[in-house]
Length: 457
Image 1: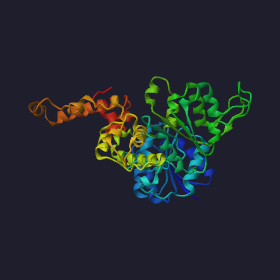
Image 2: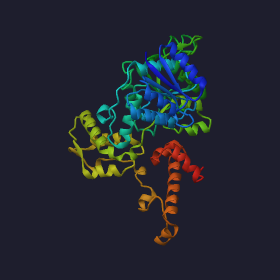
Image 3: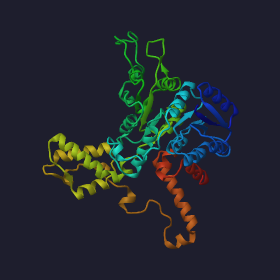
Image 4: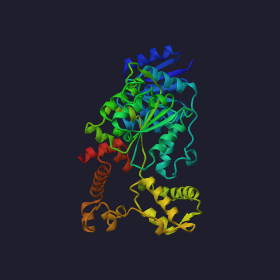
């Protein structure tokens, strides 16, 4: 009999999970807080821990770190009534097996627990570029994404991938599916903005013969095609309110109704969504449902723009040179050092997709075996550097001169620069605190504290 430790400060939740899981044949131990849980973990052999995140004293995330430091192979499932993307990311990065929001579907949690206890997973090795041949990158930002993919892929958690156009969000979605337990099942992509609003419901949920003009046969929609596998919804921010409501039902109830049908269909599908919009702003403007956002963003992944990972430019150039030389039957083997320097100075507003187009044109135009600067056609109106770079001035000015610098003192100057940097990051992130925290390389909680401290709205 396998032993599960249930940790929750609510007695009713402990009792509910005890009854539910004992019926499934598990031995259940319970604790009301993190300290009690650690005590029980030290005196019992556990097969699984199911813990709430928000608890008085030692919270679930702190408990997770403590448990993993003692036994890295012990699976831990986190549950919470307060769905937070920041908590989800922290939990998955720290080795949680899965992250489930309350109220949860009974069948869903039984399935996740059965998966977690079927075989205690070995500690994951550090992810490397070799594990993800479809994604070109070796910089620190991409390594973080590789590690996150490796951790979340085996779980059924829904994922929201966000980032600018051309950063490679679909490649990340495919990598998650390829490393998942359903890799032998379908990966079905759909671009929400590419389908007329009148047809989108039919494309997602399917339709019955005769349900509308032109419906001459029954048609299976995206979710039915992806059953057992992964549905990838690109440009999720383009969904209309009606479709958002129907998608929420799919996520909550694991069922949908084809257009023109009176019967629901049950499905088991993982949803990966992607967007280049700031969905937090869309929620404020009431263009996107908040409850749908948290259902989709169980694990959010930010794909950085190319200008934030310039160390990957030479590797990408090499990859695209090899690709298009082969396609065009040419022997362009490299790029001149000055040509590479030009690319390293460019900000790539179109990201990796733009770099690929630049190299494709360069190979097409070049008659020798090396790409020279004159074969690189960059978008002229986007080459201009910002005024700060043109004037070679720092982005933040601590003081006008040395006298003012020392009159104000180090503490005041540093606080001033920190405040300005936070303001700049928030502006660059479109006032999304989550994205600003990513840019500043600090936690969301730390940014929230600092914005309150400096009274930054």
